[in-house]
Length: 301
Image (cartoon, rainbow, N blue to C red; front, side, top):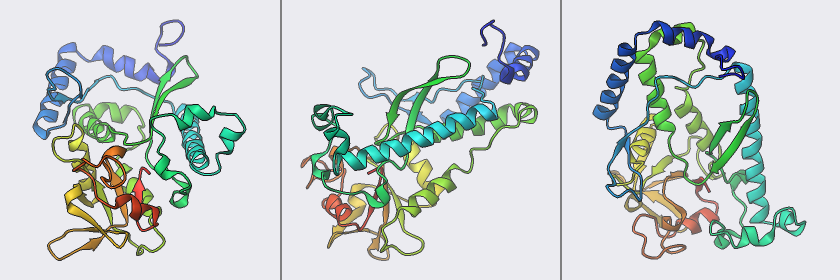
C-alpha cells in the first residue's frame, strides 16, 4: 500500500484481479497448491521445535511485485553488497587492513564464532568466498529497502521459490498474461555456470560439480536433491567422497572420478573431521587440505 492506503501503481492490476476473483476460487487454488506441494514432498523442518514436524513451504497467493526499475536498483545494490562481502573476507583472512585501520573492531571479527582461524592466510580461488548469497531484505517505505541479514554460508530456500513460481504458473496463468513477469527458471543454468567458472585452473573445460548434502534427514534435503537434479550433477554425501594426494574423488560404479567443485550444503564444523569437529561423520577427511592446495573449489568457501 502507498501512503494513502491505496495500492501502489505496480499492484493496481493485481488489486483489480483480486476484486474480480471470488474468495472461494482463491481458497480452492491455495488448497490445490498445498496438495501439490505435499504430493511432491516440498517440506522443511525447523530445528528446535518441540514436535520437529515437517512443514509445507509457505505459499502466498498474493505475490510480491516489483517494478522493473525498482528491481534493477535493488539488484544492483545486492550485487554491490556481495562484492563487498567477498572483499571483506579476503581482507580479514589476509592482510587485515580493515582491522588495522579500525574501520571494523578487531575483536568483533577475531572473537566471532564465525571466524575460522584455520583459514587465516588463505586466499580463496578467484577471491570468491561467497558464491551463493541469501540476503533478506525488507521494504521500509515506497522507495527504500533495508537488509535484515546476509546468509552467506549455506543459504537455503531457492528451490521453494522455483517451485512456488511453478505452482503460480499452473494455478493462476491469467496473472502472467496480465503482468510481464521476469522468468526465474534459468536459475539452475546460471548457478551451474557460476560454479564451473570458479573451478581450479587444473580442472578440465567442463569441471565436475557435485552437491554435498548431510543426508536425507537434513531439513533442507529436498532442496539438495532438487538442485542436483536441475543442475544435472551428482548429489553426494561425505561417504561418497575421499581425498587422495590432496585431490577429491567421488566413488562411482566405474571407479574414482575427480571432483573439481563442491557445492556444499554442510555447515563448517562438519565439513572435515581432520580440520574441524573430529566426531563428524558427515564430512570428508582431508577436504580442507585439498581446498587449501587449490585442487577443489568449495562453494561457499
